[in-house]
Amino acid sequence: MGRKARIGITRDMFDREGKFYTPGPGLRLLDEMSDVEWEMFPEFLPEITPEQIRDFDMVISLKSRWTKQSLAGNKQLLSVHRSGVGYDEVNILDLTGAGVILCNTPISVRRPLATAIIAFLLALSLRMMAKDKLIRQGRWTERTGYLGLGLVGRTLGSIGVGGIGHEMFRLARPFNMKHIACDPYVKPETVVDADIRLVDVDTVLSESDFLNISCPFNEETHHLIGAGELRKMKKTAFLVNTARGPIVDEAALIRALREGWIQGAGIDVFEQEPIPPDNPLLKMDNVIVTPHSLGWTDEVWRNKWEENLGQISHIICGEVPEALVNREGWDKPEFQSRLKKFRESLA
Image 1 (cartoon, rainbow, N blue to C red):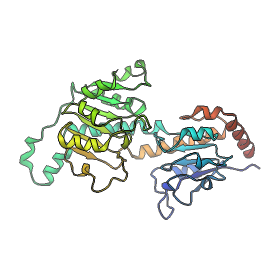
Image 2: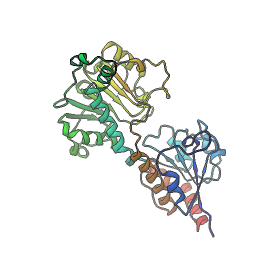
Image 3: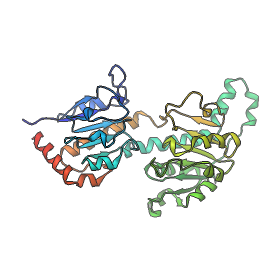
Image 4: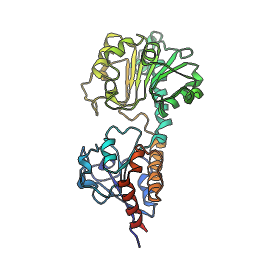
């Protein structure tokens, strides 16, 4: 009788006592898979070590970094399953070089994150937080001084129009806004269903009334939005970032909000997380801040786990999993040899 596939789960999905706190049916779904057995990492380390992944065939990972050192000497690990769409914690070249594939969960986060962006758009345009404060402070009579901004005919722009950005525009269609975006990896014919006009980055910056950030974080996009870019925006514009904090130069953003280069912002991600309590963004009335979780719903966590475990089942069957980030890793002889040995050990 063969063995079961061994799945490791990084410790950041558990609390200090080892209790699974991540929302969703993850462990129950794992327990229902008769051909796998799972184990929690004994401790959380900022960077995965070879000792942590020893004897595992696959690992479901959340926050920990993966580097060349993480995989040193490992001849068993087949795949890393990143819970979420971003994978800036993972050095993809190191993973591929070590014969390991990476999967993420882009489908599961598409609608919830797009909905979160729309929530920011509506809250900012209606000045919802300011009006909430008015009524809580007994300042009802001041309400006429806090007019909202109508959306019809305004311009919604996005830097990045992949799955999340595309879905955001589709959800925004009933608002009758103008849709523009820049994305060097997207062709015009793929976004016609959401009435998106692809333009250059300067056009997106200068014409958007609401500017959304939905691009991956990497070396090219670090501080993609800095002082120069913020000065190109309308003074009446709003910035929304639910992607990654370092895509925006936070110091420049703080200055822009203080000095009126732009009107306001909705920020779910920050350069330093958790955000320090003395960060000036927390004291600004023209900013809505949330703790990198605005898109966290029962829906997103359920779908993340279903997507992760579907990928694991495909690999066990020797099939290419969905949302495979580094297809070149799957095709490497080293990986295929490892996969063959793994499947023979299950037989």
